[in-house]
Length: 218
Ligand code: ATP
Ligand code: MG
Image (tube, rainbow, N blue to C red; front, side):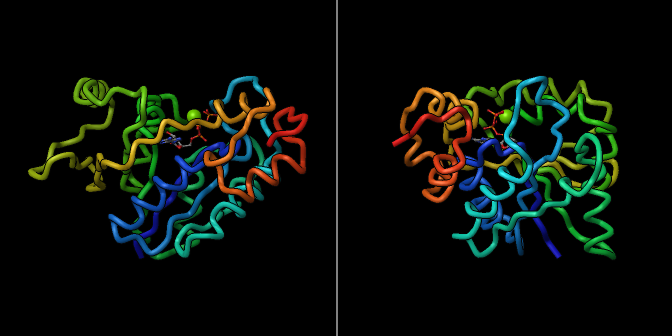
């Protein structure tokens, strides 16, 4: 079973997330890509975030359109900080005996991987698929890989590495969309349009629930 997993705060989910999950799922021939909102993201500092429930609803509304994108609320059912390593272990139990997991993330997130809880173990449980993100320079990649505690070996195919566990590290091209949740929240707070940045149902949900300090967005 080849499954994609794509975690994030998704505050809110936007077309950059969705397009990336759709493209990677299609290109790698994955059966399904699970979008997993973090209940308590370890890296979001002190800023207030929308409730897990609201973010999960938005992910659910957003994924309705695609037959292979699906929300998964695993992290909402665990107490404490949402660590990816725990999620990976849980997915191995859920999809036992031996699911082939592809963990999808943007280059900006990958550059912070050393700050993730037990990061060296992550690569025992899943292949990692890293997608370029505007503002996260890919030229620094080789230097960055050399600083990691996990040794990756370059494979013959371009953009492919393998780790000590045999799992792969794949650098994949996808449509670059310079969209971020931060920018969307700022637009909402300023009463500006977020049309064509998020799915229509997500925009309606934000408006109806008054998320992100909206006093009425178009
Ligand atoms: P914020 O601005 O609040 O940090 P975000 O847009 O970065 O939000 P996250 O929920 O932090 O969204 O990101 C979840 C994952 O999606 C991360 O791996 C991130 O790199 C990736 N990602 C988000 N937006 C894009 C995008 N436009 N292109 C490529 N990857 C993206
Ligand atoms: Mg982010």
